[in-house]
Length: 158
Figure 1 (cartoon, rainbow, N blue to C red):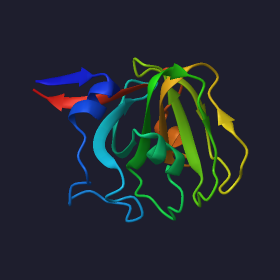
Figure 2: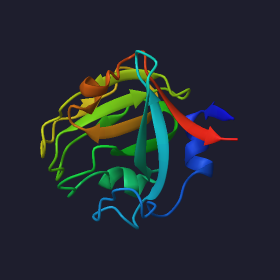
Figure 3: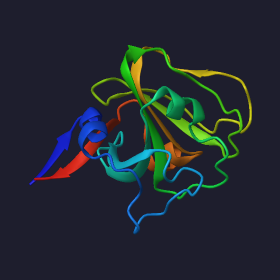
Figure 4: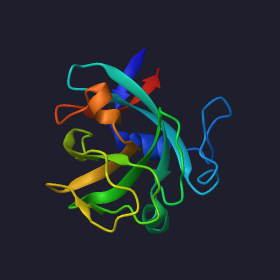
């Protein structure tokens, strides 16, 4: 039976030190981040699977996707914070445009910033306190219909 579990469960139970061999990996990130998978249920109710690097520590969150020059289409980075707060992201030393999906503690999407400009120091800030930030390749949210009625979830086979 397939169930949906809040993203926090992803961080605590599905975290592994490296991506499985069958997924596309990002060599610049392998070994420095945990790895998991999640689904985003878009505004139309369609599920889209992503393999994600997990940024859970302050050091990982500061590094983020810096120095990454390309990322597989179905791969991203999930920033997991303790408690909700306004989250500010920037693109210092980040070479690819990103979509930033800001999500509340229950996984519901609060806001999205699309196609951020690589290597800028301009802060990209959530519109309200959030617990998660999902970074995807630029243009992904528009292409897949991910918006403010979407939700981040973990797909679990039970």
